[in-house]
Length: 88
Image (cartoon, rainbow, N blue to C red; front, side, top):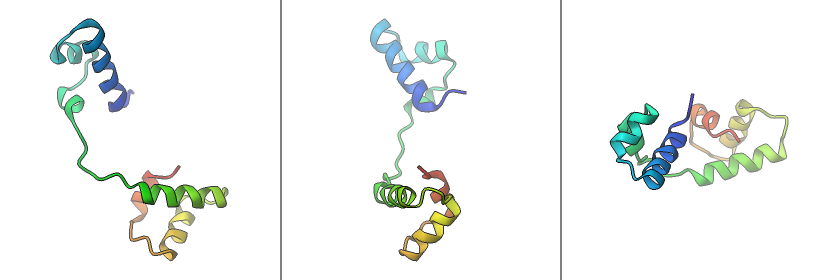
């Protein structure tokens, strides 16, 4: 399985080097055009990732569940699913 970001790069490569249309490049790669055009509206959570990375480097043996508890003690309002997704 190829991630959407890799498909976007592949479509951009085909369009740039072979002067293909977006539609043809997506057909060649079997990529959905909506996936290629998608841009996330979610703001990047750089502060959360930074905190999580720092804690994980200090406490290397801790998993995401324990890191979640430590972040909660620091006042982080994010839920455990968000912490799980951003685990470094």
